[in-house]
Length: 300
Image 1 (cartoon, rainbow, N blue to C red):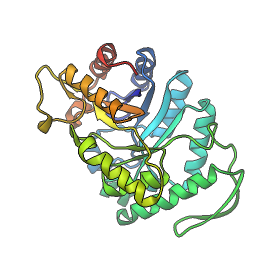
Image 2: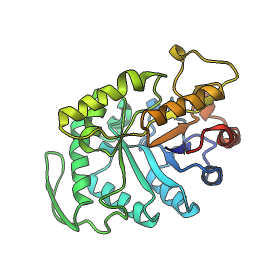
Image 3: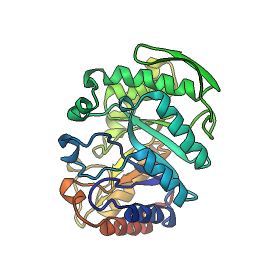
């Protein structure tokens, strides 16, 4: 089981120097991968949770690929309807090539209504658009010259090179906790990427529902690669009142042991708490928390 860290690419503390320091901490502390979030139009519903400035993730990952050598790099999660798939496929394939095959593509449908409006998109169609764009993305990664005919995107004889470094393409993680995300993960993904889930939920509800979705699609269940919080406390937290990754260090270690037992291939740790915390002018305390956790987390 590989363990990664979410790098906060938002807020006043997210300077170029700070983002470079985050990448160094993740790599030097022995973690296996890092991931960054995605917003294109930082409307008030976005900044209420993720204060600006917000760094565009694909640009940032290109930079972080150049200042790291070992860790994998990814998105948690790229909002598929926000970007036309021809550009998305080319950008991601280029990132995978330039990082020597270190890219992980976590994707989702999005949630911020005002952001959809700012981009001229209908949020009610985000699920069907995501599914079609994912089909186009996979087609563009599958051959040198590609044609595609869909309701929302169509193109003929597009030279899709350079293809991704990894074959057949970078790992595709489908983010989201609901039924539609599980169906999409079974249909398209190498992994299901649920986000900040309650303690016990994956064993009791999430994974049985994922297996049922895969059975309905006639496909094997995808891998489990959750994003969980990293919120250590000094006091014990009752399971009915906490998220996975929240509580005393021994509780967090037990959470990760359980995820390993459940078959998780990757676990992404997220230090983000709320907008007030993200609005602080310095990320040094969060990086120190990650460095400290590397000493008491179970080995990957």
